[in-house]
Image (cartoon, rainbow, N blue to C red; front, side):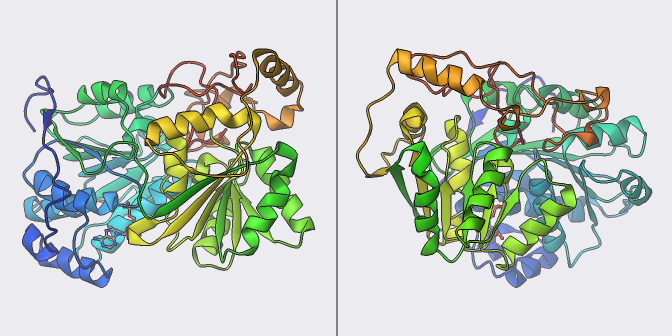
Amino acid sequence: MSTKKQNSARAVDAVSDQPLGDFESLDLAKELRQAVREAGYKRPTPIQQAAIPLVLSGSDLIGCAQTGTGKTAAFALPILNRLLMDGRGKSNDLIRTLVLAPTRELAAQIGASFESYAKKTRLRTMVVFGGVKKGPQVNALRRPPAILVATPGRLLDLLSDRALSLSEVEYAVLDEADRMLDMGFIHDVRRILSTLPKQRQTLLFSATMPREVEKLAAQFLDCPQRIAVDPVSSTVEPIEQSVHFVEKREKTGLLIETLRSSSQALVFTRTKHGANKVVRQLAKAGISAAAIHGNKSQSARETALAAFKSGRTRIVVATDLASRGLDVKELPLVVNYDLPNEPEVYVHRIGRTGRAGSVGTAVSFCSREELPYLGSIEKLTRRRLDRIGSEPKPLTGSESRAESRASAARPATTRPARPRRRSDRPYGNRSQQAGEGNAPPRRRRRAKPAGGRPSNGPPRSRRGGKGSGARPGVER
Ligand code: AMP
């Protein structure tokens, strides 16, 4: 909370092997302890144990934790505590906390968590994101909440409409910080942070934190403490992970077989078109499934998600829009129908299962063209997936080029939608975008074929580089 210049991150290794205490020992207000008890939490998770005292002490923080480890409460509880403790005499109608999240679903989920932890207090939370009408948000903001959770695009729209002020923000959180700070969001994030008071506490939380992004993050933090409860980019232990080697045309048959034995499953495809196609193919086999992707309206997405979370829908086929943040209690199975071309996305996708201590299974289908993606995933997670079927040989250079040409000739529906109107472009009316969180759409570049690599973009050694072609966690 002092000058912004000294931002060399002081490393504090979180002590995940230390015996876990209980919430009573964390010095939280009784209203919060009660809410936590009612949520059924018995003891803090390692990230909560490490982060809560640091946030309570006023430190800026870079937190790395695996998905499903209780990250949200790790920042929400101490922030709420500080709002309560420092709020005496302050109006409850000032935005004192801003949480930025990359996707609408994640923003909604964080908002719901804040609400549940703050239910015994008078602190109000509001969530704003694009894809829904702005008018009701503008009206609701006439009585500002203490906590605002937002996706960047809609927040900028509301700021430029002067529908809200961030001049009283004391706590800023960038959740899924790696994504928030990548090339697509960095300008929006900078613009938003520039409107906040310099005297504030800033927290970054993320499951994956490439070094470049961490350096960038340091610009926004003041002497941050750093906690890494689990190795960065590792996957959660209770998830059984396997890869099936399968030809592209045989994936649907294998999927049908795989789904038969599971009570519920989330299936990931690389494209919206692919998700729709899989849903149609499953329907033909008598398996009903819902699709969630950026071409669906916000209300259709919310309805499908609610039905899935409540267990009324057994199968959801989704793009990476659902790879982050989505919290479905005890989801037993994640299927990667297509392997993601960015290895970090794999970590996020499979993190939808095996959450909060439950067990889960992640099955990935890998065709010959996708072998390089598998290599990148295993390198990042430092784990060899259990293999089922015989591993094909990698494509030769000429086969790879032929695949690349075939891919370029595929119908336009398989490719990312282009912005259609001026207002769909960056800094236009982003609420119109099909994409997530109103991130500016990336300029599309056809990926160059690289020796032995699939045509729709080689695995990248790091995220956020130019021409990545795809934004994981952000609809394509
Ligand atoms: P998150 O990583 O914040 O998305 O949290 C994942 C899941 O863990 C959510 O369903 C939370 O409600 C749950 N959770 C968070 N903290 C705890 C805790 N201390 N004990 C049990 N479950 C928790």
